[in-house]
Structure formats: C-alpha cells, structure tokens
Image 1 (cartoon, rainbow, N blue to C red):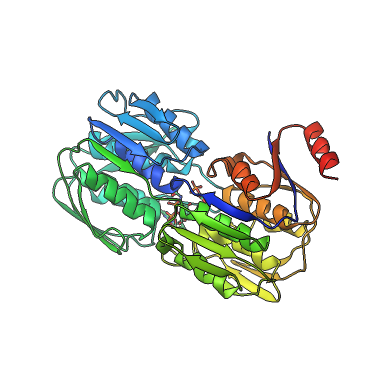
Image 2 (image 1 turned 45 degrees about the vertical axis):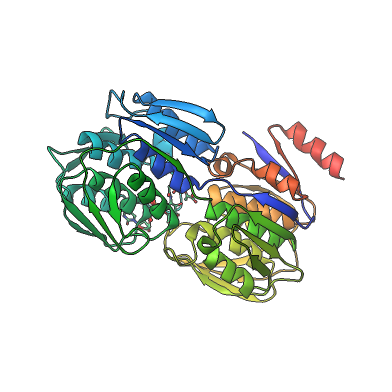
Length: 430
Ligand SMILES: CC(=O)N[C@H]1[C@@H](OP(=O)(O)OP(=O)(O)OC[C@H]2O[C@@H](n3ccc(=O)[nH]c3=O)[C@H](O)[C@@H]2O)O[C@H](CO)[C@@H](O)[C@@H]1O
Ligand SMILES: C=C(OP(=O)(O)O)C(=O)O
C-alpha cells in the first residue's frame, strides 16, 4: 500500500498541464470497439481506471496498441466474446459502458455489475430501462448484467434522473439501433458531448449532445477514426482549488475554460482572482478566503466531483459555509479525516456546515475515494507540518503523476510505501 507524505505550508506557484478527461476517455474507449476498423485515440490519461478498461477490452479480443503514453490504437474486429469477466473490470464504474458498446454492436453483452467510488448506492436502473426500451432483455446472472436483443429499435426514452452514465450508454447502443432514438432529460456534461463527437467521427448520427434532448439516427456500421480527448475539467478544478487553499498563484494549462465556469464562479466568490485565457486559467489567492454556499448539480451546475475540494478550501475560509450534495448520498465520508486536521464541519443529511478555521495541522488520514483523496492532499498542502495520506490507490484511479505535478508547483510531497520512508521524510523536512 502506498501513501503520500506531505510537508504543508508552501503556496503552490507555477504552471501545470492538464491531461485528458478520464470520464470522457472511459466512454470513448468502450465506443472504440464498436467498429471493426482501427481507431486512434490521443490525449488519453495514463491513470488506473483507463488502464483497467484497456486491459479488459484486450482480454475480450480487441487489439490494443500503445502508440505512446497518451495515444492508443484499438481494433475491435477480433472480439471473440461478448462476456467480460476480467476480474478488475468490476472495480471500475465504467465497466457499464461495455454493455452499451457490445449490445449496440453484437446485440449481446455480459458484464459484471460495476464498482467505482463508494459514494452512494449508484443504481443502474436507468441504463437498463434504456436498453429495454431499445428492445433488449436484461437480467442479472452470477453477478453480471446480461443484455441481449434480436435487434435494437430506435425509440423515445425519458430519463427520470439526469444520469451521465445512462445517457452515454443509451447513446452508444442507440447509435447502432434501427431507426431514430430520442433521449430526453439527458446529461449535458462535457464528457457526454465528447463521447457523442467521437461516435459521430466514427460515422454515428447523434445530434443535440450538450442539451437535454439527444437525437440519434441509428447506423449499421461505424468506421475508423482519429480522435483527441478533451481536457479533464475535474483534474483542472482540483489544481485550481489547490492554488486557492495554499494561497498560491497557478496557471492551469490545456483546459477549456467554458467547462470550468461553475468552479471559476465559486473561486471568484470566495475571493480568488481567476484570469481566463484561450486554453488556460490562472488562479491567484492572495488573501484568506471568504465563505460561501454551494449545491452540487448536474452540468452546468457545480460538479459533485469537485465537492470535497471546495469543502477543504471553505474549511480554511473566514466564516461559515454550507455545501449541499444533491447527486450522491454518501459523499462526505472524508469529513472525519479532515476534522483530524483541525477542520470544524457538521454533516446534517446531505449538507455540510463548515465553520472556517485559521489553519490545519498535519495528521495521518486515509483517502475514502478518488476526489476525497485528492482533497485530503490539498488539505495536507495547506496544513502546518506533515500529513500522511493512506490508500492513495483511489487517487491513482484518476490523477496522472499527481505528486510530480504538485512538486513542480513547489509542493513538498512524496509517494512512499513503507513506514521507514515516512520517518525518513519526516526527519528530512524537520
Ligand atoms: C465514470 C464516470 O463518468 N463517473 C461519473 C458519472 O458517474 P455515474 O454515471 O455513475 O453518475 P450518474 O450521472 O449516472 O448519477 C447521477 C445520479 O443518478 C442516479 N442514477 C444513475 C443511474 C441510474 O441508472 N439510476 C440512478 O438513480 C445516481 O445514483 C446519482 O444519484 O457521473 C457522476 C455525476 O457527474 C460523477 O460523479 C462520476 O465521476
Ligand atoms: C466518482 C468518480 O468516478 P467513478 O464514477 O468512476 O467512481 C469520479 O471520477 O470522481
């Protein structure tokens, strides 16, 4: 098991380059197997979840060639089985995208029930409702979801809740259904648009992605494509809040500022200066932050995947803030860890009431999930003394070279794997 050890107190200063969006890449990799021709995908983040999905698609017979660290060629013509039982796939959320992709292409899929961050109950009833509406039957057998159809037929689907996963999954299956599908109340996240753009580049006919009504005219075949994934808005936002919490000055490069609007608006509200460029944003925090209230919402609202990061900043702000989590019911598990660093936060139902404190002190804490883990690292960077973050395997699911990028901004952070190394770091930093 690896840990991060952090000596806090340095304001982050400098420039950081953001990688491709994990949550777009997961949908795009699954969609890539829907053609028998070769697809080349660039700006792929080199993170755990992506590598698990790549391994899983190669296990079912797709050819996966790494052209470089961030570029891969995929050929799905040799897929020999539509049953995915690769043991790691069930640990990631995006295993569910193989259902939509395989069902669309082969009209049958068998995929283990998905895992992902433990942030709530995370049902997939809407995905299945969509597949059924397209004419498939679905059942659960030995821990896997089995979806099959003689043929898929376009239809009108209304999503009872705004769901990123269900929107993308139904969009994939409907791309190869007969006729016309309309998805109403669809998710509008940038990664939904990116997957739609990728499918269109393979010959799909999807209109309206980015709005709440997506229209898909099914096609019989998809073809070769070359595609570059959009920048990761959550990785970018994490560095923006790291700058804010450490009272730093960071230029976050290779981003689409439009995708960061909700994050930027909150940073400005709490007293940061945010300068926008064509493909970069600069965050400067020169004084103590102010309090504010936030509610997580589907895009273009404030993202749930940025909730723990803003809580860390608000826990250091002047005054009392309320953060309401409206997407996942169990996304405040990290609050107890933060309390051990000196934060004063009371969780009531789906809200956290945050009483700002002057500063944190380092402690040993444990990452309960991906974004909460990243937020605890930010807390450690802002704290006085040494913080040890355990269970960083969660952070590695979604952040490429997190410690290297932070170090390049002046952070004192190391990845270690033994108690001896932790002691050595402590002795070195005093
Ligand atoms: C791999 C990936 O892209 N993960 C993201 C995706 O997760 P994921 O696709 O799992 O999240 P959804 O957008 O589907 O979930 C939104 C809400 O709908 C509910 N729901 C969803 C599907 C369903 O069939 N039934 C149902 O009730 C969920 O419990 C949740 O309350 O979007 C979330 C919301 O932006 C992000 O936090 C995750 O990082
Ligand atoms: C919750 C997340 O991922 P997943 O849906 O894969 O668990 C995330 O990316 O913050």
